[in-house]
Amino acid sequence: MHFSGIKHNQPTECRDRSLPVYVVGTQWHSTVLRFNLSSTVQVPSEKILRAGKILRNAILSRAPHMIRDRKYHLKTYRQCCVGTELVDWQMQQSSCIHSRIQAVGMWQVLLEEGVLNHVDQELSFQDKYLFYRFLDDEQEDASLPGEEERKESQEELQDTLLLLSQIGPDAHMRMILRKHPSERTADDLEIIYEELLHIKALSHLSTTVKRELAGVLIFESHAKAGTVLFSQGEEGTSWYIILKGSVNVVIYGKGVVCTLHEGDDFGKLALVNDAPRAASIVLREDNCHFLRVDKEDFNRILRDVEANTVRLKEHGQDVLVLEKSLGSSRTSSHGASSSHYKYKVMSGTPEKILEHLLEMMRLDSQFTESGTAQHTPLPEQEGSSTGLLAGFELMSSKDVAYHMTSYDWELFHCVHELELIYHTFGRQNVNKTTVNLDLFLRRFNEIQFWVITEMCLCSQLSKRVQLLKKFIKIAAHCKEYRNLNAFFAIIMGLSNPAVCRLRQTWEKLPNKFKKFYSEFENFMDPSRNHRAYRLTVAKLEPPIIPFMPLLIKDMTFTHEGNKTFIDYLVNFEKMRMIANTVKIVRYCRSQPFSEYSSSLKNPEVRTYVRQLNVIDNQRTLSQLSHGLEPRRS
Image (cartoon, rainbow, N blue to C red; front, side, top):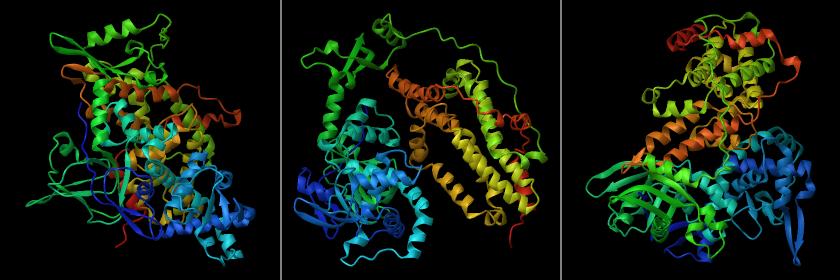
């Protein structure tokens, strides 16, 4: 198995609230750890400072009793809030906050930047009876917000909560990674593991190795560009993965030979070969974050993986590789023999994999006849190359979203799971059809070009502004109906150059709709492997129409990034990863799409959304766009 590389013994810059602390060495000590965990900055950023002020003023306006002097163990703490009360209050203020864990991450953002402080300077926010104080309340003569400040806090509160909800997950992840590995809970390990699934450098590692890494990874951050992480010729003691930022790889006599970015790793060769560092690593930008694995943990995980691996050989060649299931190991009674453990297939010849599965299959296993009827392709919706339905502007946005979702669900429901497999491995290689999947993917493009077409064929500025508002409302309703495929298509249509260049149109869009659109763009943010989208979808209940192009991308990434055969054995771990994506589709369809009230069943709208008229030529759309609003000289 191939693993990736490591570093350690370098001075690590760590921060207290007031003094820089430098920690050298590889040993974990409680005192050292406390400072090594801090990534707080000495001067908070303006937007987080503003967010803290808005939240404090909102609390003083709506629930002033939350900030008061408190006594504990005969000691008085001035102007404090309680962690549990802050979480309760925040969850009551916005529907975008789905869980207490999410709220904890949002408060952690303020704690990291020193805008909110624990009275004993602890560096992680906890949903417990612990005391926290806003930065403005640190002063003896902290002033109460005036009438104007109270009004501003009311107006800006939702935007502030939205901002914190977007950056909260990263802060929560950093908070968990700063804990000593022995202090991480089962929930913490699961959150770290979920994050590791989306890191490019770890994509080739097995599930077992990723779960082992979740327990030993250490968070490390450096504030200034130009910081040397380690130098060429030094002993290799750690393996690094870039979480945020970028670094230059520098070799004596050659200078910068390459640049590594978020998701890349470095430091593995010195560990694997037990050799000095082959290059120096220099921070390319400020505020870089890394995950670090110490050499001792690196070597132990490799040993454990090999110890938990069973290899069946024939004629001196591996024909089946099994790995002991961690879940089974935990539940087995101590003293149980290894034969009582369950093993999962990692790789093998097709014959041996099938033989093993048949031997392990119990008679009561839930293998039932599929019952899936032959799916007949739905009629293709080619549409015409021009045209605008005059009655569209009179249609209810909610009606359009409902009938669009109803039709999209029909298309999505007809996609057989095997079509995803055929599409990933290449239909030409299996001589199978993927017509239902093709239709559903085509529907995404159709909706996207429909939005662009309607905008570019609307000649009057005032009507174009109304049309823009309408599309934003339709997108909001699609999101409400959990039709994320159409939601993405509409917003991407509005982001098309032919539409986003219509400056006069966007300038006249009311601020309320600009905020909605900005929120939708943040939801679609592709950074961290579409993390914002994935976190939201994970909380949704079926039925869901997922963003299908992303699922296809996931399966393609898994297929192209992992060999199908390793040493002539089927890479079963790769098959399991692809199957996990297929299971997402199955989960999304595990509940039927519910018919809503008859008031939404408008036959005119139903017909319209199933026969969209689109122009799918980008050059033609660009020409129409420039005809509406010529380029300013």
